[in-house]
Amino acid sequence: MLSAAPPPGAVDTTEFIRHVKQIDTMIGPGDPPPYSIINEKGRGQVLLVGDHVSPVIPRALGNLGLDETLLEQHIAYDIGTRKLVHHLSQHLDAPAVLAGYSRLVVDLNRSLEDASVMPEVSDDTPIPGNQNMSLEHRNQRIHNFYTPYRKAVDMMLHGFREKEVVPAFISIHSFTPQMAGFVRPWHAGILWDKDPRIPVPLMANLRAHADGFNIGDNEPYSGKHPADYTIDHHAEASGIPHVSIEIRQDLVNTEAGAERWATILDDALRDILADPELYQVWQSI
Ligand SMILES: [Zn+2]
Image 1 (cartoon, protein in one colour):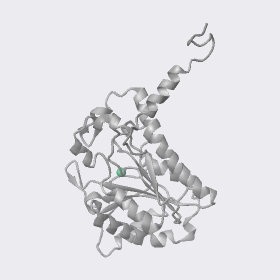
Image 2 (tube, helix red, strand yellow; image 1 turned 120 degrees about the vertical axis):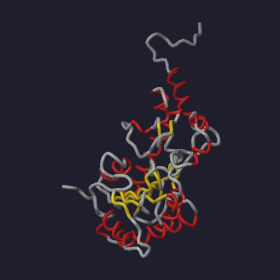
Image 3 (cartoon, rainbow, N blue to C red; image 1 turned 45 degrees about the horizontal axis):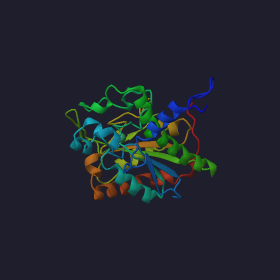
């Protein structure tokens, strides 16, 4: 007699297969991929990353219960950074890895141990779709959005290693001009922790600009551990030269602004990135 039931002792895979299918369905038709790579064959000895370039929520998550207009604001993404990374990628002829989804879905610049990796509240705004999530749902988000991005960055870094090239790693963010009633005075901020090779001369070069920029040193956020996970995880741990750059959003929220700041950053980075001494694995003592 034929039976659908597995023989005694056999592993029933039905449940597992159903679970995998469920996981795979979080990115539906019309949703973007979890990351994209631009200028993949760029010859620059630099990898750019944009953790927060995208405001997109996958359809399966129904805007996380938020009003559409909120998803156009800074809590959903770093306004202007997609354009800025595109322009900078051209200027430096550097490949760039860009996030496909909003940081409200899963924050790619957080470790999985960090409670704010799927924030229940962002800048005082409750995120209904992130509250009371089951472990299974959390794991689906990690599987769909977080892990593929991490792997894409690793894959690009592996490509440099295969060519025996030590790349510079540059992470691009933007910050809202006002936070909790405080008007932030900086045009841009340079975030760093232990490795000074790019951040220290970059701050000096930007401050020397004719426009007299106010450049934050670990402002408006600190790059000190455990903040800035992407840098910690992909760059600091392996000793490749790195920096996180934060630009005020009103300066890069137009095509012209993004292009202007790509030029400013390119100019400020030029002598730093032209120094062959930079491209060495660095070990703090
Ligand atoms: Zn950011």
